[in-house]
Length: 373
Image 1: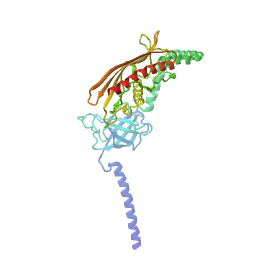
Image 2: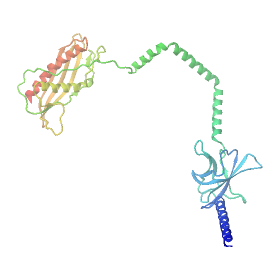
Image 3: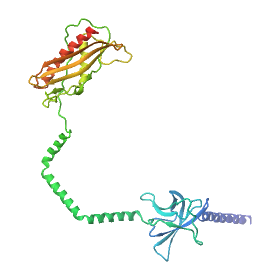
Image 4: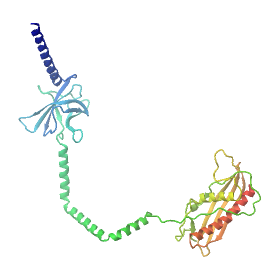
């Protein structure tokens, strides 16, 4: 008897557990789970393809519930009624509108509630049915319908402009035929346009250099102090890397093309420093190092460094030089000029003329500086 009674108790316990589980599931679906729920209806005049029982309900983009039923109207086959269960605290008003949204291009649709004004009246129920919400007129207008409408409008535009489009295509065909017939000339035309706009492959420009002075006459002393030769100040077109061969009208000669290894001011500075070193004065620098005391500065204003084309071409160099002491006082100042005959037959002859003028004027500069400092 005890064994039979034990089996009876186990059976009753199992049955009670199953009934409790069903009751719990029923409570979750109908009583709203852990939060109180409110039900609303929305009637759609058209297809709600993809909307399912269990689809999410969003209020201003936030999930507040789900669709609990989808019903057809036997009196009106076009109407579909969706019953939704949402959190009771959701601010649904009489002017709240219902729409269908697609979260992404391939995801299932969801019902979207869009809030109204804050002072709108609460929505009232009609009899025993849940309150009926206003549906957006375009709610059932799907993405497919939109694409179909867009294609239809494009087709209408093409149909209305059929003749102009035919003319345009014919003109393109004519132009393509003319282009193919003159294809051998196209490259020349494009190259000309490229040259006109300053593009195209640049021709190799010969590089011309000047050499430091090697021989000096008249040096009477070598100063003990240290000398810095800063990069000279320059005037106008002297500050570039192009060798200036100038016509009598002041324009650059198109018959000559040459350039310096660097900007002329830097080349000039470097060759002046090397010339001082060749004269036996090794305490000369092109730049003052940090924390190093300098006794003198040789400040140069470069005014002219060019070849002038005329009946008697000349290479001309002109600059002023000032020896400045460590206290800022000017110890000496002088204007240096050189003008020598030039032969302008090629780059080598221009370089030779400029080197002759440079040798003359920088030789004078080195001797004057060493004797004055």
